[in-house]
Length: 131
Image 1 (cartoon, helix red, strand yellow):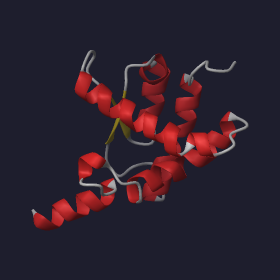
Image 2 (cartoon, rainbow, N blue to C red; image 1 turned 90 degrees about the horizontal axis):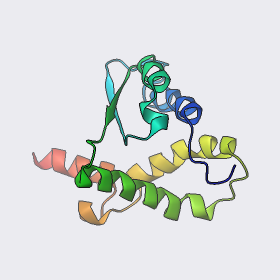
Image 3 (cartoon, rainbow, N blue to C red; image 1 turned 90 degrees about the vertical axis):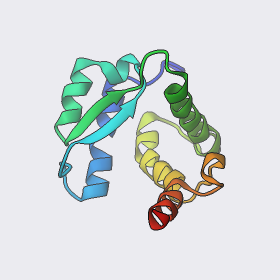
Image 4 (cartoon, rainbow, N blue to C red; image 1 turned 30 degrees about the horizontal axis):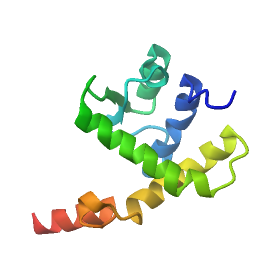
């Protein structure tokens, strides 16, 4: 069904890949916080239990928190505008195959106005070097 949103199963399908890509193994060396909104796909007990298997710690934006919700909404809108809308996406499998590369590009190459027009990782490196 179009516009049905993302399911808990979709979320669970996406959870292991970033751990494997970042750490080269199926489990993080220590608990990694994973921030999401309070949507049912993310807060479902099955999803929260599954997330802990690769060493992820589900965290949720505070209910009615404009700042944290605004940040996640801005991220989603950027993904939609700059990645999703410019690529043919015939099915969910295609999205799942591409989303990791989109997030990597977002963090490595995509300038952000709130980060002095630098990509997040470049901004963090610069801030770390000056600290």
